[in-house]
Image (cartoon, rainbow, N blue to C red; front, side, top):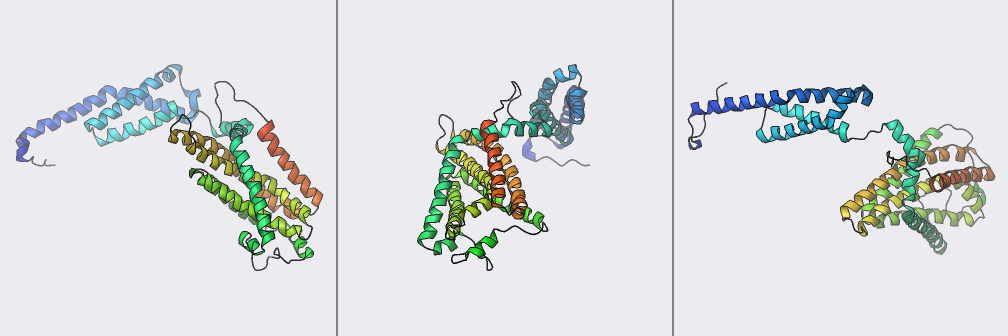
Length: 357
């Protein structure tokens, strides 16, 4: 391939540029030959670690790993600065990324992470948000009271707060029998699996939205909690008109103790981020938000689990159990399980292992 001519102002004749290109190629080859042995050794060590973890690595290789990683990283920096050939640059870039993950990346597999998460990590993250949980709980109770009072003052507020379809009998003016019919159990389980999937999607969307809105200093998260709980307050007002509050509470408790707890934690997680941004203390705003985000993310992983449990409870036990006492037993048991796990079950991480959260 013919080399292009250099411009006149470059100061060299065309035939004088060729030795420079040859020298560059020679320097590139020499650079690679001097370091290729270390690169290949690092590549072999990383490959064995990717396939079998630390068990396949000799002690000498394990000790040499950090030094080999630094050599490869330094070589990559030199390669980028001196514009070495693209193949060498791509190889070093991939090798440094793989080695970084093995040197500095997480040492915990998914099974171990899940075990540590369930056996203490999740509950510790929830307890770290105790102030935000208290604020969110107060807002949810206040929202329920507001919904009740608004509907009691003007029935039009009921239709603004509660979405009603054309065939929904849960509306002002409904008879006791009509409202009782909405609380009755189903005769069969057909279609309940699809119903559970739909409920999981709806509940998770509310929780994720409450968490995601926390970046605006937590205010939208609190407003979302007020809106959702105002709907519950309006329903309680409606059923109280026919003296059916106990029956409605039993019907809701089957899944509600899990679902509302999950919504509470999601709102608290969003509020935690917003509060950390508004009051970062001695830390920078971004640093405080990042630390709060890591704690809140652990809580949100658990909230997804709670939403799955709530959807299954809402689709199956709530639709199949027709006894008020039985429904209260299921709901009360789930509430006791969550409270015990979050606030009574305290397992500290082993020294040197860190926290799964």
